[in-house]
Image (cartoon, rainbow, N blue to C red):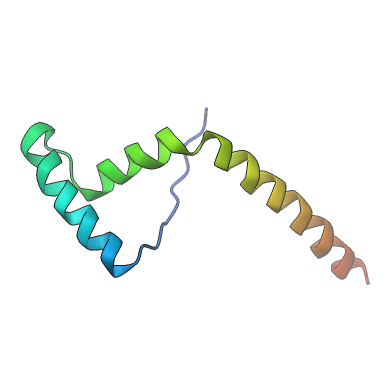
Length: 69
């Protein structure tokens, strides 16, 4: 298994929510924003990864076609 670092951009309202959650998590188990977001992404992304790979597969077909032209 390989690990990748991925950047997520969240809206201001989501950032406020994340900060509030981080305060709660920090009290319970010391986790910060990055750690709790990592948990959420890892836990909920299994099907999402499949969708992203399908997207990348379709994009490379387009890019290869443009590159050959």
